[in-house]
Image (cartoon, rainbow, N blue to C red; front, top):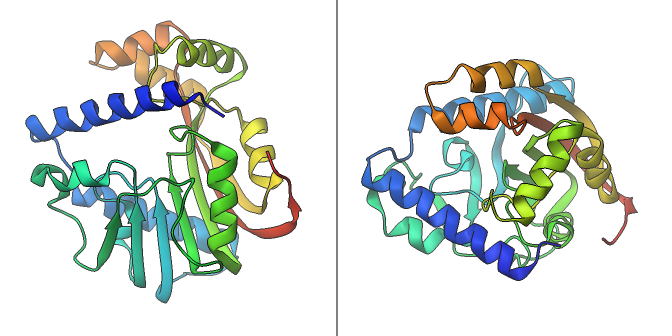
Length: 249
């Protein structure tokens, strides 16, 4: 579990990040959320060996949605997004202009989901598990609120072996304040499985390509990441409930 002070520091970092986007009018891009939603549905369909998949008539929850969330671009009966900075986002019109009208946004932490057990058919954790305070409690809560046969869609930025140790050090020293946790492919797979889920599909980007993109970027920050060995690559997984394998962290 990340220390409380580290998580609080991460929240300050995250708030400043989005405040800057609001001021520079680099807020939410609806097309990006639509693209992520289409990609998610394709990955879920591939995992279930189906031509297509729909959540019409289903209940969907996104944990750590940010200002808008992928859930906003998804068709479903009930759509809920939770984020501990939701109240702040709601005060910034530049960040929330693309929010779906039928999405309920709650200022809630993933560690304390205010929902009954077995309430959701799909839970989305889009590149956020490395931002939370207690990764085990968040996953325990997700396992509690997801229905039998429900789906967990989880993505997270990973680091290769050397980058893992470098990033852990950067996180602990609060050089990278926004990410209290660090994962490798092996560690995130083990974490998902021990949290009571069975991975049906997973994939990840090539590290070398991500490193090259950072190295050739116009952004000094991204070039610095490449030079310091801190480039990351995105991991994607589709999992179903397997309560027999649930271990408390």
